[in-house]
Amino acid sequence: MDVAPLLLNKVLVAGAASGRIVEVEAYRGADDPASHAFRGLTPRNAVMFGPPGHLYVYFTYGMHHCCNVVCGPPGVASAVLIRALAPMSGLEVMRRRRRRRRPAGLRDRDLCSGPGKLCEALGLDRSHDGADLLSCSFPGSGGVGLVDDGAPVPSGADLGIGHRIGLSSALATASEPWRFFARGDPNVSR
DNA sequence: GGGGGGATTCGG
DNA sequence: CGAATCCCCCCG
Image (cartoon, rainbow, N blue to C red; front, side, top):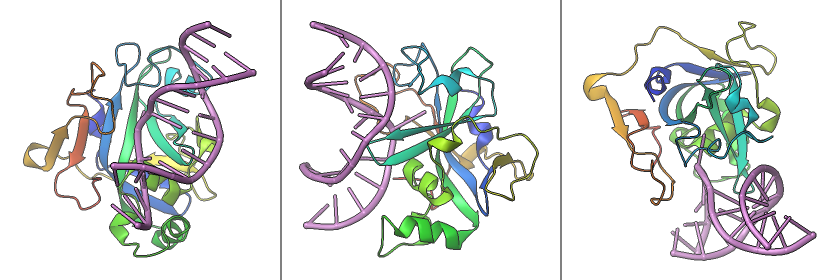
């Protein structure tokens, strides 16, 4: 989707931890069979149908959380999955959280280089589903927010574009070029 | 009420 | 490459 790459280089903040967004994927609604919203509104995906600028967090594989930024107007499901961050602050708390599941050999690039990893590093779970990312009460007490610190959106050779990861290839939209990343950043997944 | 599958991760 | 591990949702 058009706004998805605009999230690149914005800063996602959760309490003392923050990171620069270096990889995203766009998901749509009724026209995207890979989207959780494809079959309409359910209790789980309700936030996707709400106003933009809110966080949609889901639980998957019995153990991982993934987070999205809702990007469509109310009533139109649209979300951008945050797939990777370049850690900026709170590295110690990130390491502490990530070591619970990955006790040994944890490098900085292992903290936030995947959608499940970054939620674990930031401490995000279903309790953050629906959080308003743009309410300017700047996080100091466990709040979550999205910040534009002026870093330019990657363009030209710095903007990577590809198909979305982890989808069944049978899905009609699986090969759409809806994954965007900061080319060359070591935190980009896979 | 049952069952299949999942926007993942890690270790072997 | 397979297990872990549980929630969600469609279908009967």
